[in-house]
Image (cartoon, rainbow, N blue to C red; front, side, top):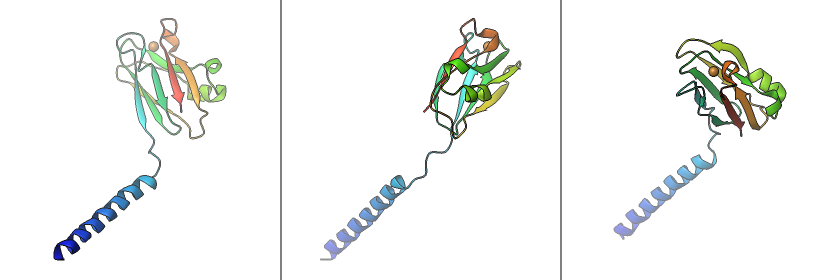
Length: 133
Ligand SMILES: [Cu+2]
């Protein structure tokens, strides 16, 4: 009898722990904004990674690798929202190695594939894609 009562206590304890875990999963807050890094000119005139998937509210840090200067210009013609493409663009060139700048994806960003390029190296194929999910 004592065995059964201690067993049922364990079961109750286990069940309450399970409820707590399930509860925290169900009622958890949405994931916090993430920060991604894209290197400009790593291993050649390219963005690395070339394609990045983000969510509204996230931040992308563009960092100089090699063969500077670089910048990030969003192509209005190849973006779901040309106004946003313009506002996301960072025309100022980053000259120093390790220099970086942030591009913040607004909370109301329209989803889709935004193409961007580096002005001095566009012809060399320094093009990337930012996919807002
Ligand atoms: Cu460049």
